[in-house]
Length: 356
Figure (cartoon, one colour):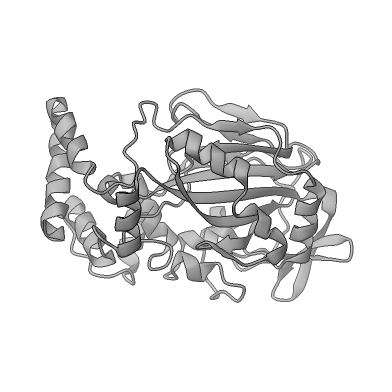
């Protein structure tokens, strides 16, 4: 079936579904055409899996982090025209006029990306068997393709004022050819479930400082949340493209971010301190124990070998242009490319993935 026909079928099925619960089974049958795993989420997300022991030498994780800076702000994924892959590079494009709420004292570093190990010391984490088993348990599938290992480092800060879901990927539209804000809108809009790639995220913690707890909503954002308080060598494997989560206060109650930060500020370890650096100038320094470290592992999951082959060969892919046209059909707009700033504004205002 031509992709443009699929696009309009998806759009009209979505409209009918909103108005007529009777055709829900037809809608689901259509979406089963390409989606990599066909799973039910009656509570909005799959129930997470707790992991009580991550590695035998947890101090090693912090050693690796200290040795492999500098780290960049992950909010770079949500602004600008770079693809999500380009936004993570060590010498990123300078971004101006980022919204203040995105400039937080949290930084990210990639240790593996697209299945390629970037930090040799961390190579053992890419195929971590406990993480792999959690993916098989969560999605009830044995076809798990590990792709990413990264760390997030936070200096003392107040609790995040919003929960969020992670940046998803789709058949043909991924971190390689689309910016984070576009992928986020594709996921949050639910207009692309037919081509969604199922992704598991395991978040592990290696932090013994004050607070820094992880809060998540295992039964959907409208229901009760859970606080994970054991921040040393434990993890939660979750459906984080659907499950809302946030980081609570890190450090003392009076903690505030360093002044003078921009979206381009970096974090780097030198001698015995973590240094917050803007344009070569050290804005603030912190003891190692004051910096919260979480490690994330992501893998793509496929229900059977046919879905994996489709992904590997590009069968059933949509293009970025087709994705834009699907948004146009929903919004009644006529955007044509990712460089249009009005497209970014419209999509992020509607489907940012963040909930206050």
